[in-house]
Length: 250
Image 1 (spheres, rainbow, N blue to C red):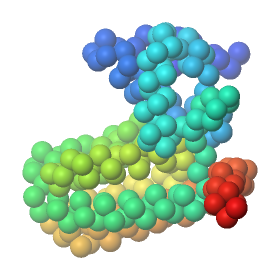
Image 2 (image 1 turned 180 degrees about the vertical axis):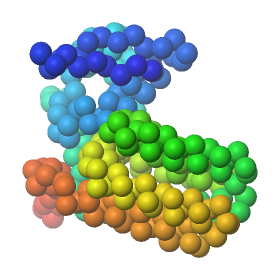
Image 3 (image 1 turned 135 degrees about the vertical axis):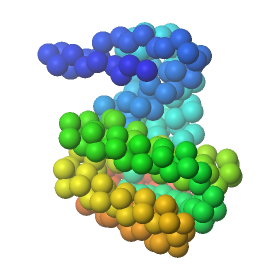
Image 4 (image 1 turned 120 degrees about the horizontal axis):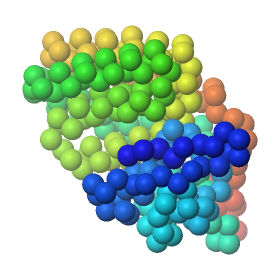
């Protein structure tokens, strides 16, 4: 699916035609999810349904349904009389998401390593090559997609689709922060080296090593994301939690 093209002079998005390979509603969801993941909408930015519909060349109903799905995934937030905004995450929420990922992904790796097929291993190596090409051109969108393909080849081989869906939802909820991580050359170099190590452990069937290397891989990303998280994001994201706590104490 083509991305919305940004008009550099006006800062607006030109309408794009959604591919007819799926329903308009699903295509709209994919387009909005990708745009948020790529950082085209900043955390806290309002998402006007009419504007999104015009930019995507669709009617408002599929946009409304897509936003409801994204709200369930934690990628957008709805407030009465204010509408939808891109979700902000606090450091505490990022830590929580990554802790849950650690539990689920470690289990997936334990179940997958050793049973991955030759095609699976080839797919992972192909993802690494795609990441290297994207890195040379600093194509963060392609880099993010290849990175996801690398990891989810392992997760999906666990043959536990509900667990894979839970991991996918956690990834979706933090993708717009992950794109910031990939925007730095130093981080891209680190990811390339860490993927190579994980690949070697997976190829030799060492699940313990693959799990530990993946944990270190996540921890490095989490540390960088928390360091880069704007203070405004943290304060605003924690405000609803503090308000709810005060309400419960009354």
